[in-house]
Length: 338
Ligand code: OGA
Ligand code: NI
Image (tube, rainbow, N blue to C red; front, side):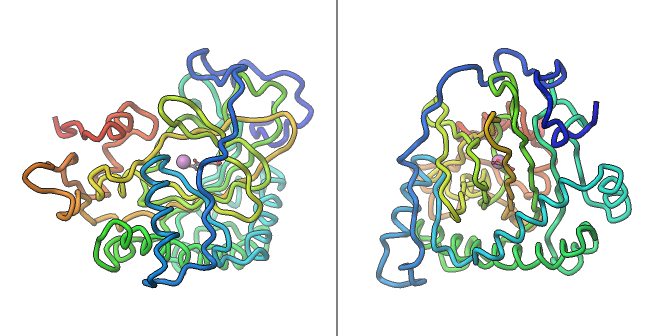
């Protein structure tokens, strides 16, 4: 069978290779759509203004859920729609052509069966490439579809602007000096996933439970549902809001805030009704940046909950889906050098 799950529109049953073990698969439990993850309208927000309402909402959401959504965020609808369109064209290209492109240009393209994790393959095809520094990294992006580089460049430029705005709001909300988070940030990676319809979503996963090792992540989740967040030990579904971005707190901001803000585990489930294309941009610290709790959050009675570590080392020692991230979630980093 074709390596790429996007080509499986006629598959009637889930192949054994894509059936996750019982304890990992979503099963038939009805997961409620969460109506309380805040949707924050950024239109009325003026940087450093007296109107702190949006900032308070962002901080509260980042404490309670580690997730929020933003609307009127300044990224034009055209830019978003074009990005989705060009990615869908890419996912529809003949596999040989994408593989050739990936080899020649050096980006990562993973058809569903390229790798297995926790005993099965994910129900998605995926492209990933660096975005920083922009001009240089673009040399590693696909050259087909022809418009790809222009369209994605416009998208990344706007995401960069939005990310700086959001990081400024978070810095301000936490009481950190201006530029504390924005100054260390870069739009490091873009990864886009195509989650095709699945004949039996109870058996499969689009993406396993994980934490993002970013400062923040900005996700365009397209028009299809599928993203779920772990809240108080229970999965909740994230609403699809047209033209909104889902923003989540990554482990790095959790560490800097000394767990004042939390990064939540999340996963993607599949569905029978419609395919979904999502675009994830990871706003990461510069690799050499040492990440540690800001002095503001540490005193005689509040010890640092995490040890200092350069982001580069953090990423190298952490296992994206391993128990390590669960430990981070509990506010304690193990002695990783042991
Ligand atoms: C990710 C992620 C969610 C999605 O790429 O880290 O969580 O909906 N993506 O694709
Ligand atoms: Ni994620």
